[in-house]
Length: 84
Length: 147
Picture 1: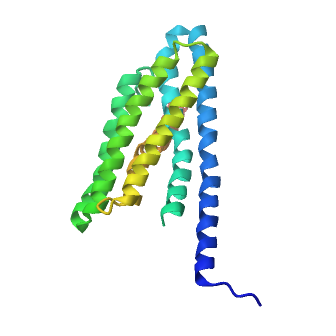
Picture 2: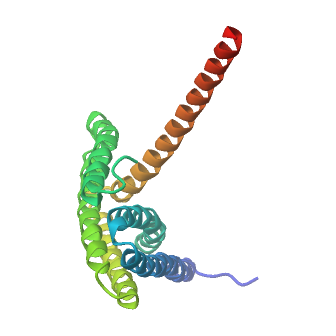
Picture 3: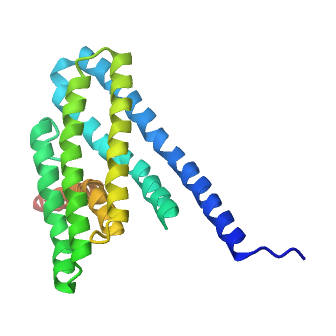
């Protein structure tokens, strides 16, 4: 049976955790793309119905607040993996 | 939600409600004497408040742009916000006088508040509808009894 030294095991754990942090950060791309898409559609909606601008801005703001949180979840996990 | 047509009023309401909800963890941290938690939480809260203001300004700016340009603009701004979140969380992790998880909770507080507010509004609307139905039913019964 092959035995690894504690230094090797620690190095493997560190490298795998850095890879996992990188993979976790992929989750941050999705909300950005989604928010951009929503903003584009909101712009065309305001152009069609300028009197609804206030409600469009508010709805978009609430949507962005909620959708942005998934990116931060992944960020928290990634930082925890890298710095612990 | 009452101020759905007025973004500025809505923004003030969100901030006000977030601070009211934040009293609970702040008082807990003060009573328990966990000053790292308190400082981390307040840092997260301040950053999330400033980012909310930035987000409103970005949205209002994007509405005057063409569709494709607005899409790219908001996407780029989101990644800048993401970098700010990253910087804040790294600072909280590396600084021993700030609690990392408390900072993360402070950053999330605004999202929690909006979700709780929406659930509360939904429950309130449902309850009011049920009460109205019950009153209508009662009035119908009285009318039928009177005849």
